[in-house]
Amino acid sequence: MKISGNVDTDKTWMHTPEALAKHYIPYNAKFLGNTEVEAPKGTEVVEDAVRKLKFQRHIKKSEGQKVPKVELQISIYGVKILDPKTKDVHHNCQLHRISFCADDKTDKRIFTFICKDSESNKHLCYVFDSEKCAEEITLTIGQAFDLAYKKFLESGGKDVETRKQIGTLQRRIQELETENSELKKQLQDFEEQLMMAGSISIQTQSTDVFDMVPFSPVTPLVPTQANNASPPPPPTTLHVASIRKDLFGAEPFDPFTCASADFPPDIQSKLDEMQEGFKMGLTLEGTIFSLDPLDERC
Image 1 (spheres, helix red, strand yellow):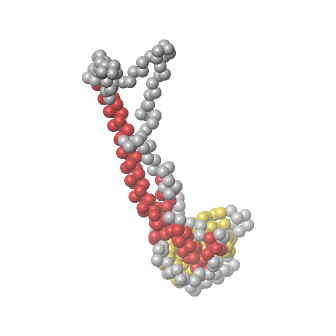
Image 2 (cartoon, rainbow, N blue to C red):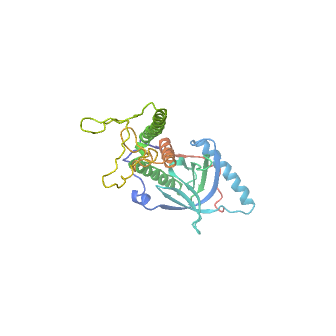
Image 3 (tube, rainbow, N blue to C red):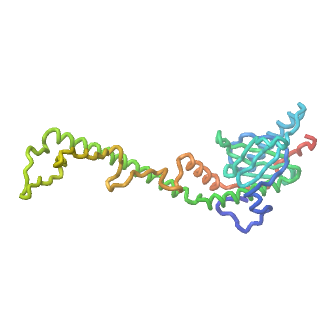
C-alpha cells in the first residue's frame, strides 16, 4: 500500500485524527539499531538491513549487552525515538523523510522503516522489536503520514511551485530596480557634466512684458531677497540616493517583505523538501524477512 497524493480518503484508520494531530500515540519497543541502505524503498532493502542488525545484535548479546528499550511517539510531526525513563530524544524522524515502512508477517514483533537523514541525506533503516504489535505501529505511521500530507496541502503546500515562480519574478524585478537606480545616477552625472561645460547655461536673465523672468526647465530657481532685507529660506534638496523610487515614483520592491505569503530562501527550501518527500509517498508493506526469530530474552 502506498500513501501519497492519491490517498484513499475513505480508508478507516486505527486512531482519531485529533490523537495524532494534537497529541501522539506512544509505543514501547526494543531498538535493534539503524544502518545505512542504498535505496529509499524495497522489501529486499529492509530484509538485508534486518539481517545485518540481527547479526550485530547477537554478537552484542554474546558480549553481555541487552537490546535497549525505547519509547516511540508517533504524531503528524514525525516519529520520535526516546529513552523511556529520561525522555531524552535519540532520533526524530520527520514523516516526509520516511519513504518505506514494513512489518514482518511471520514474526509479529519486528517492524522497520527507512528514513532520509536530515544532516547526511543518507537513507537509514531503523529496526525494532515491538512485542507483537508491529502491524499496528506500521499502520499508525501510515495514518500519521496521511494526516501530515493533508495538513501540508491545507497550509499552502499546493502553492509551493507557484511561490517558486513568483520568487523568480520578484528577483527579476529587484534586478530591474537596481539597474534603474544605476541609470538614474548615470543620467544625473551626465547632466552635471553638461552644466559644468557650459552647454546649458544662461548668461543673462531677460524679463517678459510683466517684468518676470521667463521660465526654463533647466534654469535653477533662485529666490530673491525680500523687501525687509531678511534672507530667503534655503532651498530644499532631494537626494536620489536617500529616496530610491522607480520611474513611476513607487518605492523599490522587496520580495521578502511584500507579503506574509512569501518566504525567505531557507524556509522555502524546507517547503520544497517537504513537497518532494510527500510527493514520493510512503509505502506500507507486510513482508517476511525474519529468517530466525529474535531471542525473547534479549
